[in-house]
Structures are given as structure tokens and as C-alpha cells.
Length: 392
Image: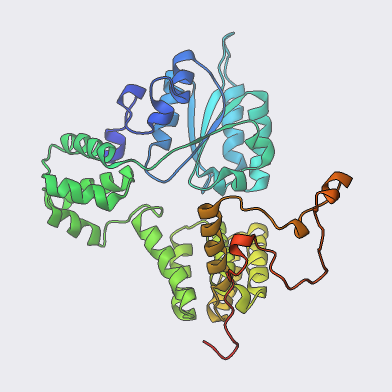
């Protein structure tokens, strides 16, 4: 009954597939393992690219006691239990720290991270965190400053094919070129998703073809990882429903995300972006509401935060829409990339010194001047194209 991913999980760095910029010859993690460097680090990257596997290989190679927790379900008591068990042991002189692998570290709140910090500071625990979210936003500064951050990439097609070949061999199956190519494309760099489909297709149909793989995905008994394809489809439907001003569809997809265990801060963050990207100047207070919702989610937490999220989602869906500022910014950005640093008109330049004034900086500037302040080459450009109130 052991999952396929666990059966074929590499135990040595030489067997690991992907992340050559970290695990390849002369790269940071390989050097750390080869030279026995013990330090805390965070693995940031998309799902199914080897974060857990790298943590296990690191711990095994350095002979560190390994503890795995998920921040979704773990709390202070779990950390306390690991530390107390460690302190209760008879320690040899050459004692090494225990390694705590904390999956989805971004799901730990500030209080939980504060509780963990002293054990990392004292060296009792070496922390290896895994996250799909930017640690700069999700990990408290004191903890982040005591860790290195390694960024992992999606697996490329060649790497995915190699993992699929290993899995097929372990399953004692065969897979044709067309089926393998289809599975590589479907998994989109997520090895765990590919392995889940392979394992389920073998159990359900006993063979691996394009047809059985497709049927497996549609089978109601197969549940994908919430960070897999279904996750992105649901998020996309949620955003598009708000954009189309359909509050009922918006709330349905919101409920699906919350019920599947989606991080509420991820949902709130998407709505903050949406408030400026799709509503913008049509109703500027939308950004205020979205920002306050994000803060409320941080303060309240689930399950009650679902009420805050539904309030904001319905508000954004019903709000008037305008992409004028969004489109204007990217049109201006195109000109910046195309033309580089064009000379700024002299009259709007800063003149903090006498020499700069003598050179003509700030000369001719008038308060509320209507003449264009754009560089000469772009002086007639209009990026922000406002629609009249009676225009839809």
C-alpha cells in the first residue's frame, strides 16, 4: 500500500533528478552534503519538484535525526515534543542537532514561528522548511535571517520523462511514447502529480495508455494534490467569475478552494491583486477593502476568515470594472524597455545644488504645469486612456 512516490524516492543525491543549479556538481546543496555543512534552509518552489526528497537526503547524508511535520496540522506541542525527546536522550560528546523538516512552513502563523525560533537559534534544531509561497512574505524576519533560501524550479520535460521511466519500471508496466508525452505535458513539471496518475491508472486499468491515463484523471476516486492542475483551474475560475461580475460563481469557487484546504492568505492576496488589476479606477476603494480583508484573514484565521473572504469576493464581483491603469502601466513599461533611460526634461529635474541650478535643472518649472513632463521623444504619448462615464 506504500505510495509510488515513496517507493521510488531517491535516497542519495546521485539518484536525484532535477534542480541541477542546487544539487549538481559544485552547487550549494551538493557542496553542503559533501563537506558536511550543517545549517538551516528553506526550499521554495512549486509542488512536486523534490523539496521533501532533498530534505531527507540532506538529513541522511549528514546523519541527522529526521522529523517531518506539516504546518497545516502541526503546532507548538509537536515542536515541544521533538525538543523534549531530544533533551531526554543520553547525548554523546559529538552530538548533532535534530533536523526538523517543516512542510508548508508558510502555514505557520507568527506565534508558531516565534516559538520555533529559539530552538533554531540555539542549534538544537536544524530547520528545513518547504514552501510554495514567497518566504519573504510568509516567514518572520528573525527566522528568515537564520536560514538560507534555495529556489527550486519546475522539472523540465527530460527530467519528467526520467522520473516516469523509473516509476513505470517500479510498477512493472510499459508505457508508449505517446502516453509518456501526454503525461509529461499534463503534469506540467509536477512529478508527484505524474506519479499519482501512474499509480492510479495501474490499479484501475492494469495498463498505461493515453486512454487509461485520461480516464484515471476523470475518475471520481482520484484526488489531486491541491497545488496541482485542479488548484490552478479553480483559482482561474474564481478570478474569471469576479471579472465577469458573477457573484454566485465567485462564491462557489471560493467555497471549493476553502473546502480543499487552500491557504486563505493566498486567496486574499489574489483579491488584492484583482482589486487594482481589474477594478482599479472604476472603484478605487476596492483596494482598501481587499487589503483590509487580507489583514482580517491574518488576524482571524479559519474557519471564521471564510466570512471575511466571502464578503470581499462578493464585493469585488459586484464592483464596476476598469483595467485602464493596468493597461497604461504595461504600455509605459513597453516604452521603458524599448527606449531605455530617455533624458528627463530639465524643468522637472531636481536641483539641490548651485551647480545644478546653473546647468538649468528645474528651470522653467511651473506649479500645475499642463505641458507634458514626459521625455521629448514620448511627449505626445497617452498611456492612461480614460473612458467617459456613460461608456461601458
